[in-house]
Image (cartoon, rainbow, N blue to C red; front, top):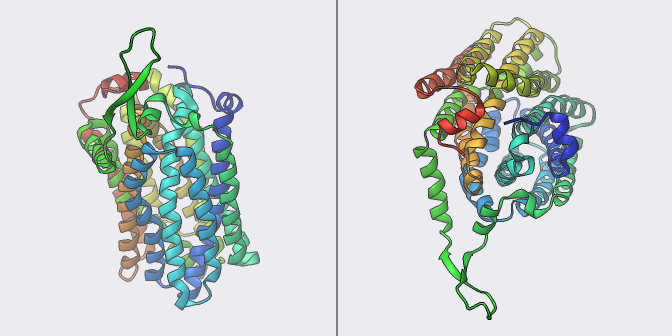
Length: 451
């Protein structure tokens, strides 16, 4: 199957352009919020590792816990309406950060963060389920790479701008920018037609009942009667869990990403402690700018990796090397990140973070495209959010445990552990898929029982 280039997809697909534009604006605001929120928590808590750990948990675990419910929800109801409603909700929630003035108000920041990321689970579930319908099969690889590369580009740009805005104008400006970004996102989603976000089979399941044509004489008007009643919400939720366990490839992706998150979850604490505390003290960096620099390097790395994924995938298809590529790149990126923990300066550490994330960015684009192609549309919302939710559950737990470890080990030691644990995901991939004969993505789809 020929994959569309990035330019072909963007020029020829207005609905995808609108979705991409909305994500671009809202992700920019999200990173303003992250840098400002983390800085505010650090300021009012006197740089408490526990306070920072709670902030990371409030960002990650609610999203993770809400994801299976959100996935089932967006497979049953209008994905477009879900995205618009959650954007309006997030606009109001984002403004509540303006009420935090001292340590006694920290609970407001935590509650607002929990609500932002709970509603965010519904938005992401709807967006991820709708995206393959907007791109079509030929545009899925390019669409996946663009959606994730712009997200990671905004990690870089948003972090840098958020750190600068927080240092120059105060945290309030960053919170207001975040709130307004959700209104713009809602408008761009509103421009997308409802029918473009789902296929016919999903549309029929979104009705409370399915209907079949009743046999009538030719002289009479056709009549329709209720067919099988639709399964309950709980039944469809259970169906998503069952599919993820019984489908070999889906379970491989789920397991591998959870293993990766055991190390990847520490990155929040690492960047905050290494940049905002260690190098801010030893090299005189502004704490917000130092943290933003590390996120910027990481974001640009992931963006570069995503943008070269199209050519990489084409090369891998010709060579039949998708299987080995996924495993070895996961191992390599983790080892490089671990080596970064030995670097003596913030800039040298940033370089290793950049390279490590560029490598895993390419891998993730290839992996995610294979995963999305494997999923029927009617269950895609449940599986994509379940996979993401499981990963973020482990990610959140890892973040909190890592914040506690800061009382006993150095941030540099944590960086080494983080990289090596993340590298184990590649080992898991080889173990799970060692018997699979690799080839092109289309061949892989047949191999894994996908259509």
